Amino acid sequence: MTDHEQLHQQLIDRMVIGGSLRTEPWRRAAAAVPRHEFLRGGYFRRVAGPQFHSAWEPVQAGDADWLEGCYADESLVTQIAGTIVPEDIRGPITREPTSSSTLPSLVLRMLEDLQVEDGHKVLEIGTGTGYSTAVLCARLGAGNVTSVEYDERVASRARAALGRLGTYPTLVTGDGLLGHGAGAPYDRVIATCGVRTVPHAWIEQTRPGGLILATVCGWLGSSELARLTVHEDGTASGRLLGGAVSFMLARPHTPPPLGLLPDLDDGKERETAIGTEVLENWSSRFVVQLAVPDAQRLTMQRDGRTEDVLVDVATGSWAAVYSEGGRWLVRQGGPEPLWDTVEEQFGSWCAAGAPTVEEFTVTVAPEGQVIRWRP
Ligand SMILES: C[S@@+](CC[C@H](N)C(=O)[O-])C[C@H]1O[C@@H](n2cnc3c(N)ncnc32)[C@H](O)[C@@H]1O
Image (cartoon, rainbow, N blue to C red; front, side, top):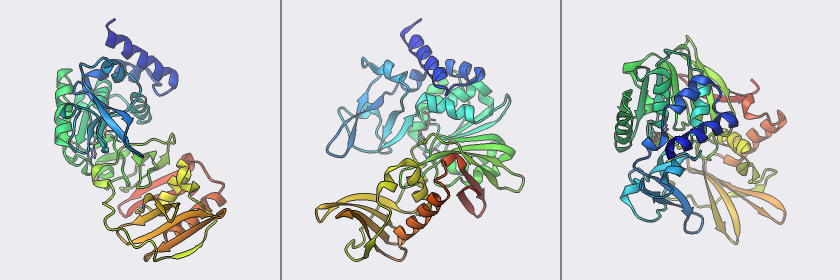
């Protein structure tokens, strides 16, 4: 065995033992795809950056630990700030990742959750490096796989990597939120970028009885994987699968710039029973995010204390929450009292016994998406 074959086998074994790789057809597909072929352009490793920031340092294909990193069960960032790839820079950079190779155990967990059968046609959104596309092709045949990537440079690297392995699925460069009508109907749609709401195009392009697997994310940074069944009436419904799955947001779903902040002194202050701990816990943050989906969070030092601020830039509504003398206080301004909405939604979730996300249902209709616990 060569070095990469040995590392590849160890990764497969770890995914089987860890339970993400559960069935023989997917084990064979994962074993057929060498991940390092999709990372020949290098990747970025997280390093300590300036205060409060992570920085990213390039690891190039020739570097000593490059190959080992390719077979670590970790997400590997391959593009930063929408344009920068590892070979573009030397030394660390402090900007946000915009493309990556998802950790293999999550790729395989999702492919298992997709419940494919032989001959199924699959639409993938978010080609990235092409690694997950290649695993899909190994399982279903490239003729049954369509993958859409938003970023031209990322798409062309994926095309080259897939081509090097002799794999030729339908690769589309464009906004995957629109699906790819030319290849419809699909049996399955899988998204490896997060969405705030499942786009209706995906439902229209999936046959009745088909499945959509996507991570529902939001601007407060909590997210969960949803599996929806498409119905004859053009709606789709299903459940959240749990596991705190997180993905970078689909580019058109990223939050707008904060712009000029509202005057955070010009608000009404009162005591609140709910402190900012609801924003720390993953599940309660998901509940809060459902209550105020257009709010973004920032943490500020003001008047010698830490304030957590929620701002809805579209309406100008805001709420600043902080602790003082052992009590939680909130100051709110703008047309919508954001923290009142948070208290109401969080209170009703607690009153229902704080159901786990696996008890939540998701329904998507042309009018929009609704997520509820215990219908
Ligand atoms: C986490 S990466 C995908 C990982 C990939 N499946 C792999 O195995 O390497 C997410 C990708 O989604 C892409 N993306 C973001 N928004 C998109 C959109 N609206 N349509 C298609 N792709 C999108 C990003 O450019 C990024 O390459």
